[in-house]
Length: 196
Image (cartoon, rainbow, N blue to C red; front, top):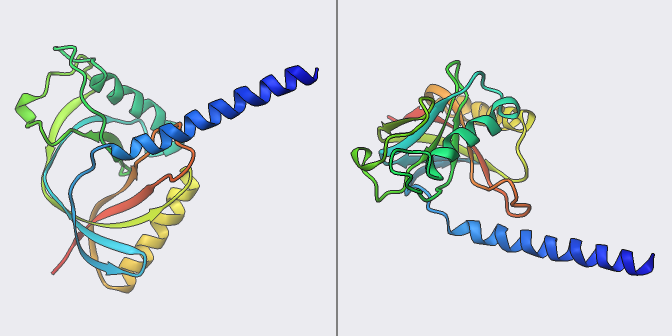
């Protein structure tokens, strides 16, 4: 019995170290280059360049109900589910538009123009170009849930209202980590703003 416990402990320890290593390696993933324009309390206002994305529509705006489905649909495209069977590098963040017409999208690596990307095999994945945008963003850690997203959305709304910042469109959830990352998790809630 004692030997079994030590073996179990060793396996759990090795698995934990492996997850820890993976957590650090995901920090090398490409992210969009943005410029911070202004800061209001916990809110950063950032100018994002135009981006090419692989996008899928979602049945509703619940992260808990739709996050995994949306992620799998687009992940299948970048893992070779396209006309060229081409693997495309993963980037961060994965973005979920939480409007009435909810959607999820992955930003494509900067090396690709829209016309250079292979056609998706799935009719549920669309390649689109998103224009330059100014987003107000709140960052938080840990694992996300609808409750946490809602809490940070309210915080973002409150700070923008206090500073009389005009918004447009729906709130976005932006997740930066793979599901197996257990430390240094980064999440953001954002919305497009109009800066005078």
